Length: 301
Image 1 (cartoon, one colour):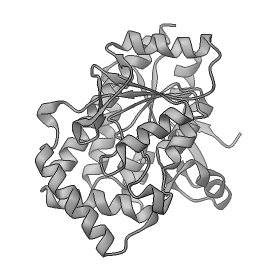
Image 2: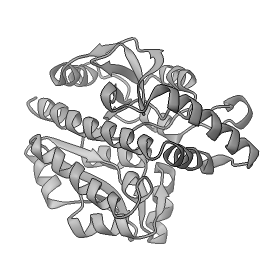
Image 3: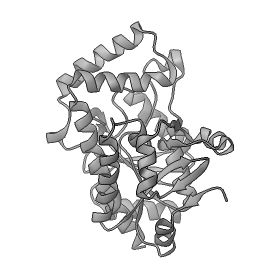
């Protein structure tokens, strides 16, 4: 099989110990060097402190890997590598290239390895101006057919949040707020939109996961939307102003397709003096800790 699962992760899965999948795009494309390596190691250590095993996912030299050693994490952090969605995996394998995995590719490879819990920052979703561009993240379709629990801070606030929630409903992907009745907005604790379901403990999340299996439900994901703490969120007024400026700049410069998201995120970082990056990291840290606690409850069976 082409998938390479590290010995530590393989043994943990075999012993039914808690394992948390982590994406590698935040390392390769989401943070500046050398901060990206520091954060990558910090997130793995956060999983370990909660009693779980981290499984960072990436493709190295055409081999999809679930669980990286420090040297491999350093490669992801320091080399100029591609960003890989799940559609890119066969191409990357055949070409023997290295790449960082997005939400969709990470979820796919983690599920293949037998991992049930995955922590990330924010999901992709339906882009603004969808009726014109038809631009929608591959994350949504992949989650509609992959049995995995994704702990995230909602979807990136640069997206069309209500359209994304509607799309998740149409695709049959379950969404629950964690400790909240509101859907988080990535940098913001509240996107301004409600959720239909609320879960308040890791035990409740694990119970839903078991119910998915007991009901022989369709192979779709459970999205646990965990808000960034209000004290660490980006100032909502600053967020609204800078995002509006970023959207105007995007339109004026004719940025389209896959270039839109990095353009907008970079604009937010630069024009909030890094405050958006700090909110992003606060959200990811909280998601990683929560995912480890959920994985621990899930492992108890």
